[in-house]
Length: 180
Image (cartoon, rainbow, N blue to C red):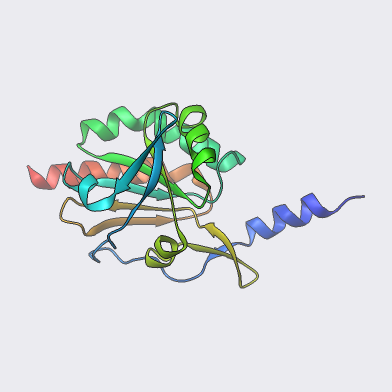
């Protein structure tokens, strides 16, 4: 019997972020990176994105894995609700640009952008996924809502993707209601 798939699944289940996430109220570290939306590459800059409104920055471990694909499809389905609340959604992973171009079309359904989480971004946002104390080079599944003022307004870190969309949408809607 080949135990590799069983060991790999057990290792991912035991995976945890390297350190505590950025706390609510903390300034979101500024960064620029490459991304894709609808299969087309573009330069992404956090500060430029925030000039348009609040941002949901969600980190996911690996494009085209089951949980990450399901999470991307859920964010795609909810993109109109995020837009109605004035927020933009951007997915972040350590995948390369060609992978993100394909993922942005297939899983994200051309609804939102995905961008490269470089090692510096992974470190700045404290989203380093570790297994048995060793860095995987991937990101943990962590969602941040960042206010237009550049401050972290909400954090949810859980390797189970199921609550990320609901909780970040609630946080964005709360943020919108505070402005009224």
